Length: 306
Image 1 (cartoon, one colour):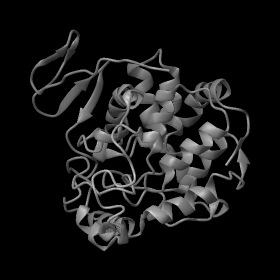
Image 2 (tube, helix red, strand yellow):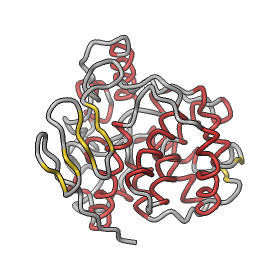
Image 3 (spheres, one colour):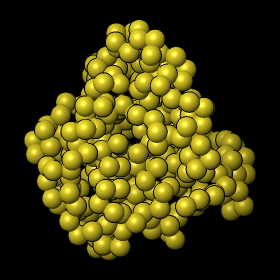
């Protein structure tokens, strides 16, 4: 399925699209009225990994461990283990509730439970794109792979579950956050894996590229193998929403095929909500729950294998 969407072109202090005006100081009006703040809850720029805050040192320590341990062989082992989907059977909403006590150690912008982030993202998209119900549900489920942190799923360490993702089996691009720590990754000195293409080829398609192991790839496996009817763009968003080196810095495009290019347009729309909807404002869960339950019934089986 190919989906084409025109991405809005926005500049501070200018008319973005008819009916959508940007402001010059504190916020940018995006799409149908979504306000993009200039700073996160701590008063810093979003995704500023060098800004001083009580989370900064912990986030950097997280990425050091992640970058040293995410090797090609490690990812192969983890994929082989978790693609069995033999841990738990549960519904989408039951999985959402499991995330009530999960806080992402890699995120410099928020320390609220993950279910808050899921609903904030989904509700912001729902407001601006009311007719794209598949996108609302994609927002709700995109981070559900973080249940890998739960004891029922092996209680994996945070570095093996969250954080920015990147290809393994080829050179680590310098745009990846805290790139300096890849110097200690064994693959960085392996000629089979440290060139531009590594084990891949021009235009091979991201579906043929192994990404660092984490919640993105795991939730993609769960959705695909359980027969979700989400469109390919939804699955693409789930699998690559943490691939910031691609959708923010433009790295690794030499590995993409045409379908990847079309789906990337939707990911770039989604990413704005995923990143900038994070706030201290709480969503009324019970109020919105019936709507999202109706979407899970539409696009997923009642019970999924995880």
